[in-house]
Image 1: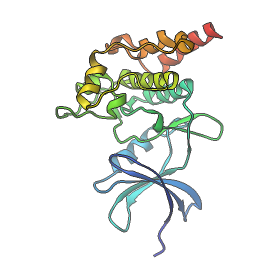
Image 2: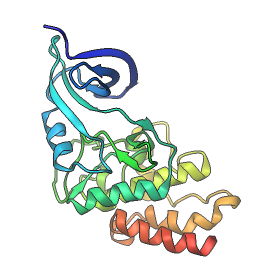
Image 3: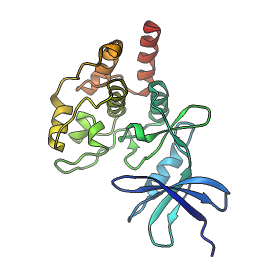
Image 4: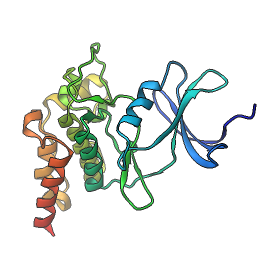
Length: 240
């Protein structure tokens, strides 16, 4: 039997999976293949199908390769230059459907041909309000972008995604993350306790919004992606 997917090159490697550019010989188009070394990607595939829409990467197929590794075949999109409004719109669409992503970072935003963003990597996504057990010094998502309550094991919420979006925004404006450390404990401690650093003078007009997105208390942040868009629209009107 002729293999359905012809591998071309590695697009990226993460902690739990690798991403490959491949040709789907049945569909006769380029796809992105997410491949894990073991286990199953069926839950992530089901999540992608459940939230299908313009702002989520489209999943085509899920299964096991001949060598036994599980995979998801998805549409192939280009990496996106970070745009806060488009990123917030992608989050808003996800939150309206009742889901939280829980691993928001720049690498998980891709760009469609007409310019809108699509979220990818839904391995940590779940319904809002879901709670999972986690061990000490473990966190769902990427520690550099994780909200304080996410670190402490709180239920999944849009506000945690908003916090992660705030980290992305700070990085874009300042050229470095707001909270850094030599160990995970140091990074976690800063997320939970450290004040938000000041932005460079040329980006100071964004400080109020960044402070809101990075509030330690989730109740003091914009509630979800839609609320971020509302705040951003007001601020953009003021500075333009």
